[in-house]
Image 1 (spheres, helix red, strand yellow):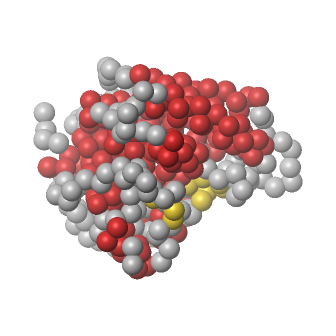
Image 2 (cartoon, rainbow, N blue to C red):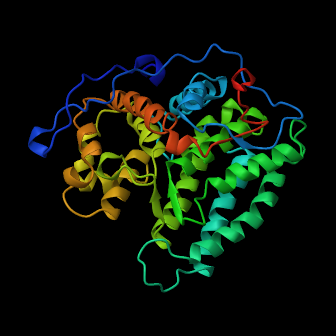
Length: 352
């Protein structure tokens, strides 16, 4: 067995992105290996802290966010989950804790609501307004779900319940704009990290979080995206991995990093995608992109096309973490919506 991802990933060489498939070479934006785990003291649940607030409002506060303990903890949690998914298929035999089972059941239940709240006929193609009704039902359901997850937890309280409910609701998109993007996916990731901080999940749950809980979440939000034709929030167009998600590519590359039969360039083989998309998040994500976008793959997804020329999944995963730090955690239009409170505290040294 190979060493964990954070210990082995090497950096790909820089190069300019190609304009056509004939010029495709190694992708330039994947330069660094996974960072070492943070040595800063961990963030804590702060009693009596004010309600959730947005703290990242400009480039100055963005720079401070990237120097914070909470930022380092999120990146460390990403690395930990990637290590837990290393070499494992979605069908890997894992033990699900009661909270994981409860969350999975909730995602399945919310998916059934789509049949009860079908899209309405409207002149505009995107942003079906029936999503507002689905979202309203989800908002009523969320507090009950969170209360169940926290039942008997001595570290939680009404503030923790309220914050977790907010993160969970934010992870389902925006009902005003009728959109969904990587900022909403980030809210789900913060939600999971907060559950970990509270002891609802332990390190023993890391594989289950990626291979089961996150997979159930993906199935739900993809159903919402395709049923209600949600607008992509903050999409980079052709120069993004996907209009909606990022983490399936990162975790999926980690899954694939311990085998040699499926290579990065295998994403161009439709038979491989059909045979293995139910086992690997990366292949399922590429298959979803191909389903949603028309035309030559290199034309509508040049970034994914470039990545397919890398020689190992470890280099893919290493570069995708670097990209996530830059394009999600480090982008003001995304993290300006992130809310801080007791469970995700803003460093007090940055309060001036």
